[in-house]
Image 1 (cartoon, rainbow, N blue to C red):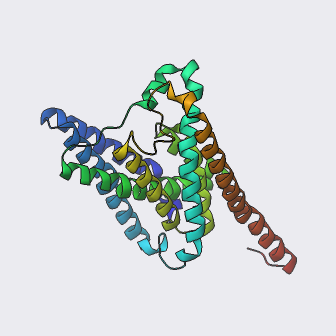
Image 2: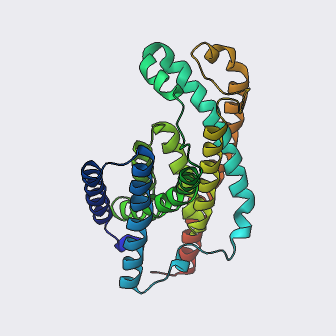
Image 3: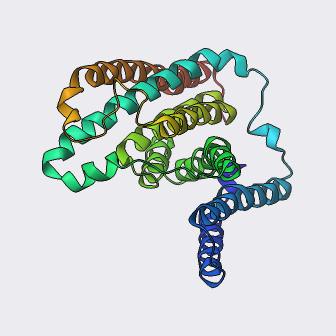
Length: 279
């Protein structure tokens, strides 16, 4: 199971492959787009596929034990709600960060406002979108919500695993706090469903929306999109409304998932104790 997989192994392998590819691109120069694609396919595709295939074979388990379609329909409503809440919160929270950093760290605010360039080549663009929408979410869920969450939960506690895995997930992204909160929601969803497919669907939908905003920026969503410092104050009202809606939705779902993960589990333990059952 994930508890038996060494997180440091996949980190070491990933870092070795990454550094090797960076060195190779200095010896054999190529375009920035092709370099990014090659590195991303290796880091998010080849390395995780090899690592988990090897680990599953070593333990005699199959992929279907961790990510399966059976029963996922029970969670579709919750996942859709989490998707809407995550997207709304992300849009509003970006504005909030810009509003805070505008005065105390204008350089960081300017960095957050910089558009993310997409490849001009249709082929490279299609591959980039596939990496961002499919490879990255799948690989990150297996690594962070699978291996890291379970390993840290084993070494500390369930909530220690949630916190540490989400924190490291956040540190891997530009939007550290937003990614950290997303990681907590995804971790709680996985712990409740015991099915990685649920957080994978959530992650794919979120990345798909993020990619859509990059592809159509700066014209969409025009009512919320902040392109210049002067627009931070101008678009405060719609962004605050969206932030409030997203916060309420995510807080409600987080409270529900925590109750499902803690209260019902504790109630089951108490019931078994009263019945005289022991492990």
